[in-house]
Image 1: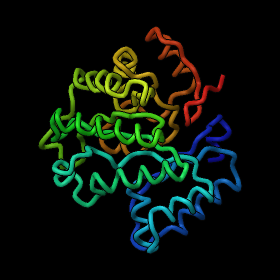
Image 2 (image 1 turned 135 degrees about the vertical axis):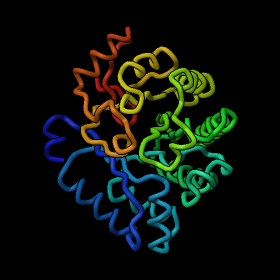
Image 3 (image 1 turned 45 degrees about the horizontal axis):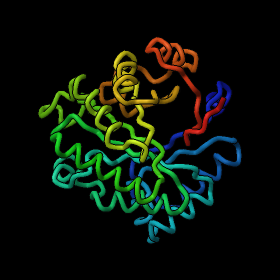
Length: 264
C-alpha cells in the first residue's frame, strides 16, 4: 500500500477467498485500518464474500453492508457473477451464489449507497443465449437501482482450471462481439464498458475501443487471478503507457475516478 500510494494509486481493490469462520468483524477491521492510514478509495468484497461474511456472523446482508459502508467501503466489485444463468452456474460454480442471490446482494448494496461494477465471465461452456440472458439481467438491475458504474466483460482464461478440457476460451471475434452487444443493449442505462487489457492483451483492448468499450481499466500494480489462469499481458501499466496505448487507437485518454468522475 505504501508503494502504491507513492506512485499515485487512487484505489485499493480487495478480494479474497472465503475463510471458514471469518465473519463481518474481520472485514470491518480491515476497512478501518486502511482508512485510518490512507486517503484512498476502497473497492472491496464481491457479492459472494458479503454473503459469506453475513452467514458466518449470523447477520443479514443488509446489516453487513451497512457496517461495511460505515467502516469505509466506497464501492464493490460485481464479480462472482460468472454467467448469471443457474443451469450454467450449477456446472461451473455450484458452491457460489445462485443468480437470484447475486442480484439480491448487489441490489441491496445499491440501496445502501454502495455502487458496484458488474462482470461477465464468458468463453467456457455457456451459449450466446446464456450471455444475452446475463446482459439483459444486468440491464434490468441497472434500470431498477442505477447503482452499477461499469460493465466488465472478462474473457475466460483457460489455463490451470477444470474447464480447460471443455473450452479453449472465446475467439477474438467473440470478444469484440461481446463489447458491441453490451454497448447496444446498455445504451444510456449503463454507458461505461471496460476492456480488460490484463485479459485481452493491449492490442485487442485497443480494438475493443472501436467495438463498444470506452475504458481500458487501470494501472493495476498487482493482480493474481488472471495471471494464475494463464494471462500473459502483465499486471502493471503506467498512466503514461495507458495514454500512449489509447492515443495509438485514435482515442482520447481521460483519467477518471473509480466512480467515473473526470479527474481533469
